[in-house]
Every structure is written in structure tokens, then in C-alpha cells.
Image (cartoon, rainbow, N blue to C red):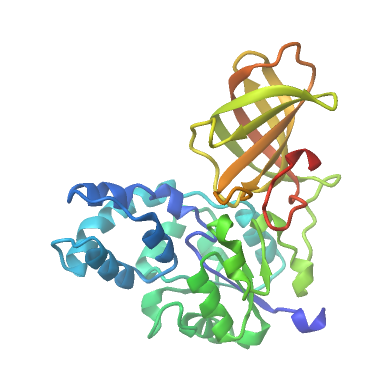
Length: 343
């Protein structure tokens, strides 16, 4: 709609563009172990999107560390910096950046990280630095998120009124800051199980693979091939699948209850296709649905594969996945995946 038309896009960095959370997920655990402490998952979730200075002071207090906030920062920051080169672009990010740059849409990067850390992180991603006409860190404004300062400053430097800007954020802190600045907001929650908390955003997506630029007056993507979207390959190792027949297909269902593996980011959600290498039966083409089961009051990722080909026996076996294409999002808008066969 015309009133939803935007002229510029402002992007958050950590958790929105880069999967820094997974790349650095054990840093705090390793650091606290030296003091006989363990991270509190609930407290750490609430810190997502905060300024480092604010988070550092809270961590020292919460874990009763014999350090000042500055000493904590000086000690832990090299541990984070060592991990940053491992952080990968989240699904759909490179596609979006290339598309907007190709069509001349002004792009800004607005992160609570300090400027020099932003520069370090994006230096490992080809073409990113050149794509942003404005790059702002939390140290470039008076107050970081959830204050709206950084988004108001980004719009000012872009030379575009904030009401004509679209912000894409992953954290609740960032979404609140964006809304307070008067921009339109698309939320792509880092923690998919908490998407209901993001209702203040104009739109909530499971991943940037679902983003439709034309809904905001931006040029539409043109890279779909016969109702499928080629994606940067995603490799998932060491799954444990239970094979069984259904509707003429061999199906493998996988949950975190019966598998132990380092999975893909939370933002990988939907129906995909690719290949599966089974420990016993070999290699098959597959259609894969990935979602979340919230039905029992707990949060479980659920993955189901339909193998393209015939299998003579049905067993439990290890397998690896290579996903190369995206078909669509799951039909269940609430990410409650009770019957993945419907996909």
C-alpha cells in the first residue's frame, strides 16, 4: 500500500544479519566457569540486544564477580573477538543486501555494538561494508537501544524522514527502539519461541527468506525458480532419524529428544529441499519441513524429511542433510508444528 511505501532500509547486525549468538554462545559459559559460575539462560535471553556496557555491569552484578564492569569487558572481549570470524550470515541476508543495493535502495546499519566492533564483524563478510551508506554503533549516539536515538540518527544521515524508513530487527530491545523512532518495523526474532512478544512490530517473520520487499513499496525479488528459491547451502550433521512409511513415501522424523547435533539457526524454519545422506540406505533427494513444537508447554525443534525414492526397510539411523532450496514458510503462522505431514 502507498502509505507503507519505504524509501530506505535500516538493519540491525547481531542476530539480524550475522549469527553471532551461535558463533560466540560458549564464551560467557567458559568465562564464568573460571569463577565457578554457570550462565542463567533466562537472564541472558533478557540481555539480547543490550549495549555491551549495560550488559557487562549487569553480568558482574548477577554473578557476583570479583571484577568491575571495565575489568570484565577487558577480560572477555578478546574471547568474543576470536569467535567473530566464525559468524555466518543468517538465511536470506546476503540475498536481501545484494537485492537492495542492486536497486539503489539506501541502506544503513544500526547496531548497539560499538563502531570498531561493527567494522571488525562486517569485514569478514564480502561486500557488506560497501553496501551501507550509513554505519552507526551504540557509541555514535547519546543513548543506545531501547532509546530511538540510533534509528533517528540513521534516518537523518540517510536524508530520509524516519516515517519512510523500514527497520529490520531481531531483539525486543531493538524493536522497541525502532517503534519509538517512528519507523516501520519488521521483526525476525532470534528466539522463535518468543515471537508473540514482538506484536508491536508491523510484521513478524520466521526468517528473511519470507521477506517480501514489494509489500513495502520496494522492488520485488526476481530469483525464484519455478516456485522454489535457491539458497546458500545449509549443512546439518549427525541427525538421528526414525524411518517409517507414510502415503507412499519414506519419512524420517527428527526432534531434539532423539538427536544430538549442532543445528542450523533458529531462523531456519519452513519447507526446504535438498539431499540426505543416510548411514545405511545411502543418498536421497528430500523435502524437509522444519518448525517448532510448542504444544506441550516446552519448546522443541521438529524436523521431518520425505525421501524421494524407495526404501525396503525402516530403521533408526544417522543421517546428514544438505539443504539447497526454500519452498515456502510453514502453514502454521504460530510456529506450532503439531502435524508436519500437512506441509
